[in-house]
Length: 463
Ligand code: ADQ
Image 1 (cartoon, rainbow, N blue to C red):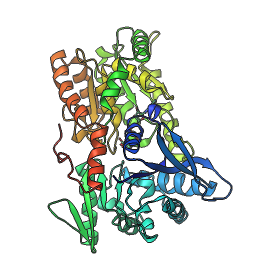
Image 2: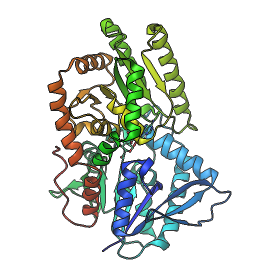
Image 3: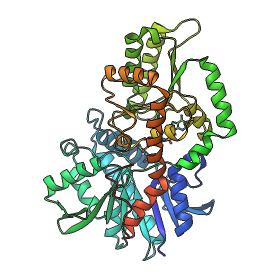
Image 4: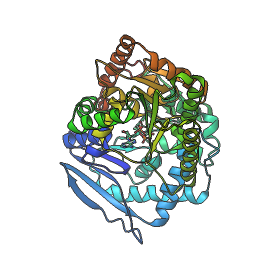
């Protein structure tokens, strides 16, 4: 059996606190042997290529330290200030700097130079996400002819947006060195194909293989899932129950609406607050009957656009609370903190509505976690943005356009008055999908294609 080598920006073996993805990748590594390679998260004065090996829960991880300049240009720079905004359709926030592009190439080369010595001839290589687009090509340049796959966790932008990136053509050309490219949805796959067809003359055959410039690359849509079973179990744990009771008691009979997101402009938090504000003014009778709990731990704090969103949201929450709050009620509870997964499961279960309204999202696992945590006898309602990858799989959610405060207001109203039978009916359909296309399904979908085995159920038709 071939070993599996996973390469990602950071490694998080052991699972637990890191969630389903780390659990699934760790399980695959335990089964197939191999290792997980990435940046340690640590800084060194001068890059030395020294590999730190560790064994965590039967999984071998290999990490390297990076220089401050690498972290600034590759991670905070090209990954988070150039590619992340562009790939989430925010060219207004994307910064195009040659030093970022150079630093990105340099760190990818550092990864390639270090990994080469760890690769055996039959290993399957699996590269994760937008931090490492050029890695496949750099490994090929170093004589690696193994099967190499790439999975993109975020959206692929439309061709005309991508064309604004000075390195777009080079970046796409380097992706063609992979044997398999996986996307979260058919939509992102098609956006990628549009570019390859219109800019490079590529064609797609009936097996989903892209032919371009003498290269053949298999394109697949493999939506990522959660460990549904584990999450339902978490929702019944002691911590979850205690959290459930505490949260319920604190809202004193009101309906709780919950949002859980990294503090990121792609998650549509500002629009969410505005939609909720609209609901409060459209439905004065509902005032004091609902509370919005928004949990949003800060992320990427050294990037300016992330500092800005933080202060915008603080201002907005303050304004809405100032306008509507009374002696014993505030409309928005805004919490900048992370919680353990079992506590989070209790919060989801205590919430009548899961409000998941990103402006753009590769998939969105919170939507799936919310569903998995519900009480089957009395489930809550998921309100989900049409622009999250998860919407392709979750037609039984109330799908909304997060740019429209009116649509959000209507959906909140509809969710609050929805009869129990309808809630149960929708939830059962959603839960069936979350269970069927779970994280192990995703893993199998991708690794089968990588190992040239048949791919399970075409992921274009879900549930
Ligand atoms: P993210 O953008 O990070 O991931 P998401 O899929 O929602 O987004 O995953 C977030 C995870 O963090 C969830 O498991 C959630 O429970 C956890 N989390 C969020 N806030 C938390 C808090 N306050 N406390 C504890 N845990 C918290 C990227 C892409 C997504 C894609 C994933 C996986 O942007 O579109 O779904 O990768 O491919």
